[in-house]
Length: 156
Image (cartoon, rainbow, N blue to C red):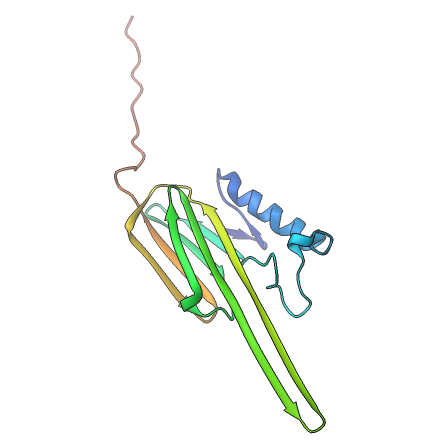
């Protein structure tokens, strides 16, 4: 759920941790070599796509911002309760005009892992890429559904 630009996740510290990592990365990223970001775009060493994670009663939806990434270069996998999105972004451009030649190459790999807040049915996972957004829909597993247990009052 998004409220005034802040991602709110009920009862899940992973969402808060991800948000804090993002904020500190934006504030101090230029001082940390492994998080350095190029001025041409946030996709050099240390670039990771931004994620939105939402949960309903029936499923979980993860939306990753991966503009400019070829969908064939994206890999999505689930190991245990961890959803992993990885891939590589490549771009080359050349411009030739009278008197000069300009060539630029940018590339970088990324890997983003998210702890899933509930068990999912691995046979019912769908990933779709559209206009720079990767949407992953995961259906919750029925076998791991929460079971409410009534509490009886002792008659002693």
